[in-house]
Image 1 (cartoon, rainbow, N blue to C red):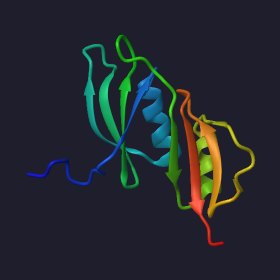
Image 2: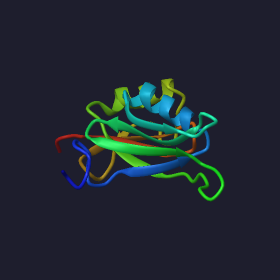
Image 3: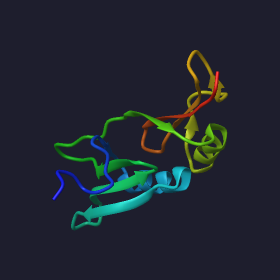
Image 4: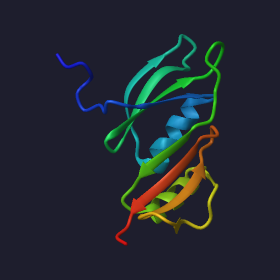
Length: 128
């Protein structure tokens, strides 16, 4: 038996979100995330869920009580940053960087704010 589940990275982000289901729905629409595990509270809210984005796992829980929501910044490499940026906007994100652009590194990058207040920096590495 392995020390971690098969096909999991050694490090995963864990997001406490107010309205966790909204975040899961957004990730499905914006980035084609696939839910791989889910546990619910008796009232149907998300106690813990995990979604796969390419080779990464994002863990999400409904905020409340001793576990408040707090915004995080995430960086996601995608095959086509322009298309992914537009798809995220179409899924309900707000732009935090217009336009998608290349700055001082090899990445072309754009930023969006998801419906739960997290910032997603989307990048595609380009040749110099």
